[in-house]
Image (cartoon, rainbow, N blue to C red; front, side):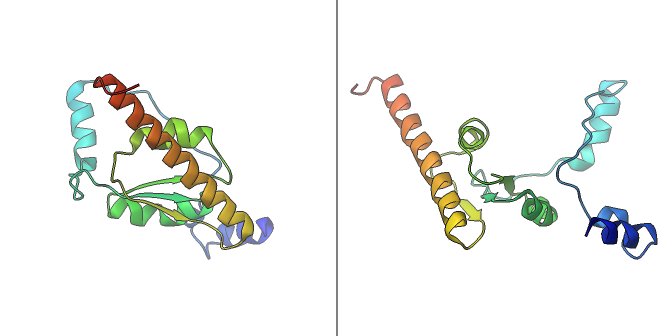
Length: 145
């Protein structure tokens, strides 16, 4: 498969950019020469929230599905993340803190026993985190212990 994909890209039948390697990325934190350059560079990327704070969050089982959906998610100003199979820490530290009560979370994964287990784990972790957050807020507001 790798050789075939390389061949069709090298001979020009498929542009290199059409196939995305979700396992590699370049991160550039170098900044701008001035505040004005930074503002002007970022201005075309500023988008207003069409969801009025209720942005849907799509969780996928695989990085490849996230890669396929990314252009559509960008167009519709939604959120997306890959669980990359069973996970707990990522859901607790990266996903749950972004969610507010009533947020819509959709899961896209395999339709098999393992996929159902992964979806159930994802739901269980996020629901547990939400219950914990509500208890903490209640305590902070002086509610019963």
